[in-house]
Length: 382
Image 1 (tube, rainbow, N blue to C red):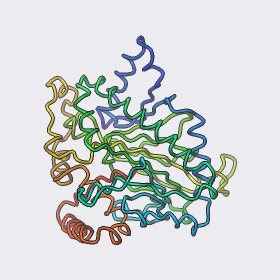
Image 2: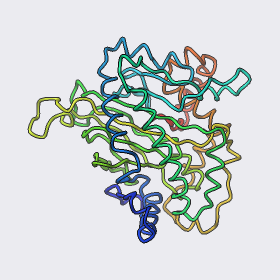
Image 3: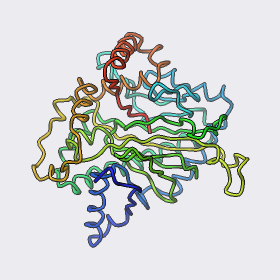
Image 4: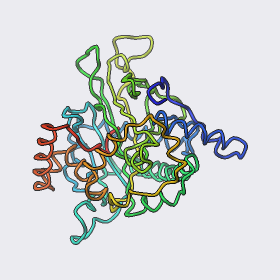
């Protein structure tokens, strides 16, 4: 059962490519989807050079003086693209201990007659090429390769669960949207026994999340149903893949969206032979969030699934949590939910670009805290 997992499964992408091993891969994938919600993907089809270039150029960006990073501040963009400074993002009413740089696929800004949430689509902000040569190219190269992998996994998940893949594909394509976040976590200044919040406990609001852990810091933790925190340390040549609320909702609880967090402890920043230095430098993390299309409505998500799928769910899943979340968050379209979540996570963007919507969100959050504290599962977390 899900509450008993004590480690994260490891799948090898190479097994997909062989007819003799693919069935084993799909069986292990099914177990991870249903019982854990997380898995490592070894040997992902993303060039090693692309990953290394991304890590190196990103480190260069975060090592820039603050004033230069602020030239592409996220608050400048109504599309939620750009740099967010340390502590400016909020999870669980607490500031996160990280800086971020957020991009997606570049596209023109939507017209004035488009729904407000279509502003999630638009152009990126980039530092000048002369400041960090190759940064934009490295990010875009990785972004296209991980999107290709995400598209492949839509089919693999459908195969593992014996679902018609067109059910997922048509929802992903209804105003296609994904987002990529580069995160840098400095060593916390104050050491506590429990550690400092890098990102607070949450479940992703995505369909799937693909995470490259770019450095050796072991800060990511996953919570099983017994409430135990299980470490998900970096493993060479792997991505960490996890289930989001959207896939959980679409499969009516067959797939599990699992709570996770990033906890920062000074010892994570030290070499193995030292307890006092911070020679490992910044923790770098690269989550790619695959969403359903922005125009998908709650009604669109009421898909017909084969009865045999529900036998996978068994008695392990409490559907009241899923149904309550679906009713609270996805009252309109996916895009409306994501815009709401973005404003809640980045109040400076809300103040500048969406003041009326921000006021409404703050009112709703106040009312929610007085009831059962339901809040959107941000797609931009992890």
